[in-house]
Image (cartoon, rainbow, N blue to C red; front, side, top):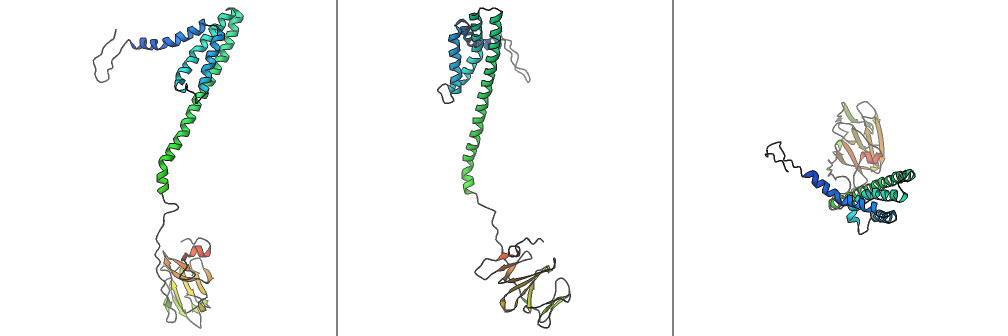
Length: 264
């Protein structure tokens, strides 16, 4: 008989028929257990072994009935044990041997269940990367390779004559005196032409070497001098000089030319 409760918020309908329906689902399993208990044990054992082999055969035709086969093993093992107990006579020794067989049988059944569940999980994990990789392949094929490109526009060099004197961005004046360039601190630079170019902040000072042999670069922040033969000033970018061998070669940043990073 069913008890009906009005359908309101937080109220559900209860039915006393649900336990009976669950019991009906257990009837086939109980019938299987009793059948194996009545049959001789030497007939029960091949049936259970056949269920195990069908589960272990992953590509077999009975894999769709794997859940039913596992239920047959769970309920069939007690039936086999009852058949063994009945065959041994149900005395004290028979009970002892049956209990030992039950311990070994249920242990093997637990190991089989664990191995089957683990194999199912492993197959699911192997399928997920393959499907995701297949879905992402068109996007990966169209994605650009390497870092994003950037267009660098160099400011052309502006050579300034030292013969008339030149204001130094770092203070003082740059002069041309006695065939040499003279800095604001009084130091002289020989072997250069009477013209120069410098960065907006005054860190880099560039002077051509005589006879077009190359460049003399002064890193006045680090107090370093670099005589680079065969190079010419191509332009400026973000306060850094870019050099090239000639007009046919691509300009390179000063860090690449010197072989190390020039941090700001």
